[in-house]
Image (cartoon, rainbow over all chains, first blue to last red; front, side):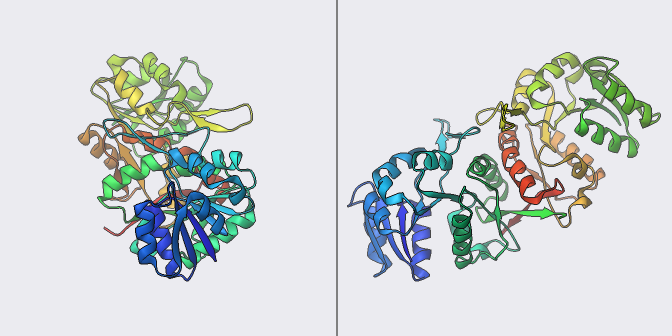
Length: 218
Length: 218
């Protein structure tokens, strides 16, 4: 399958590598065609990897991944072009982190809105699925880094899109049943609002190789 | 030991019951001396339970529990009186939930502040420990309702106070090691911001008998 990755950071590159390893074709998009992170990634990715603008990556992909910082995601997706998003699954991996001059993290948007909702409102024909924003990039594509059973979450308005994303996550190594459905796209608020807690847990563990698991009586 | 419970809701009553069962003495405080929830609780609690005003409960307790709604906690604690909080452990169990006319939940404060921080700022001599706001009242006092190992969290500026709260939670049935320390009182932001996620998980499980567990490589 063809994937378009919007963003060239560690999350985008990690997901792009995994997708290529799985035999998918990947275009990594950035603001400018000659972005060095994107071209360097494509140079080492082999014949299944390429780079280009946000619009070129979005046009290429049958499934798109928003791997930009949540605070600039709308801007990046506008550059990608609504016509290249329409009808496609858009996996939103972003977190809208803002850091104060003292290095203190907060979120924008938060509480009564989320990046995923912003995207879904502005691009109503995209099939937005919030996913994978709740853990570190290495664990996203290699769940065995964390021992035992642990969980991922999806939220979005399109049940079929969520099921396709869950199937993709199985390719990544996540067992069937590990992906818990949090309902419609407003569920992304809670997923994004996990970030301050996650950062504290990172402090507790001194590592990013951890993840949420759920225990339930039901 | 003597406990003062500030608040008469389900969380306050559940904690008060457990504390009495464990042999502690409990005063449940409310806005007015004749609050029917508080007097009804005291009537059935036996000789170790009593009710009174916020101030009377706070004066009685050697350890205090804020079990009011997070949006009114400061007001309740002002009524309790700074002089009755000074030097005491104050376990803040609150969540600052606000519901829209459509029933949609959000938080106030959120993101750059938390109820626990508000309390610690206004009552600098209280030893605030955020705890127990991340799960349902029945599970707080009976962790075996949820199978397997699962976790609680504490945040606060006073390490000795957090250790005393962890010891109390062991009395509740939480295994040593189940309580994870999230650092100073600002860690309460992340704990309170779990609530929108928790509400979605409740929708997923169709029950409140679930809890966070953590899996870590370390």
